[in-house]
Picture (cartoon, rainbow, N blue to C red):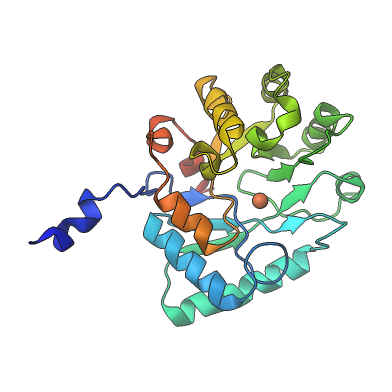
Length: 245
Ligand SMILES: [Fe+2]
């Protein structure tokens, strides 16, 4: 009879308060393939707060063929979202960095010392193409280190061209790259092969951070139901250490 009273404690929904901070999402409106409106941004932030996040560092795509986002554009949108959250009484802290696609423009910004938006600890979240590998992935990531940034490779488990030679992941980690797994990869959202690779990377201690990579509210709803095999609580993700940097 009192089931409703205990529903929050007895259901199987994942709660992410021990993760504390999300370092990968697309919740600034209208600047990439994430949310389109400020109302959606507010709804996403509310949902992330209810999942247990204390802080969101959102990471719009910077991909010069599609999303020409500059620090000014990103930080301007961040201010709009912050003031909307204040008026709605949403308490989760929101900050912004970016998810940089490694292309010619990125390399130019890196080598000419232009402003790049970073995660705490001078970390740069970067992504690779999904279909065709870069000729020189390892060199590109090492160039980031040489320019005194800490590279964090987004969703390594989604680059299926690495699957025939997964030793590349260890090479990247050994040369100083941190890897960030997507929560939805662990639940099989991107397919069984991606799920298995995410699991393999975790079992081999190659993952440092976990992220939502949420583009829409449905992603967060899926995440809410996602921890079927306790992957999220089983491994020592280091997100929390970024909260107070
Ligand atoms: Fe992303």
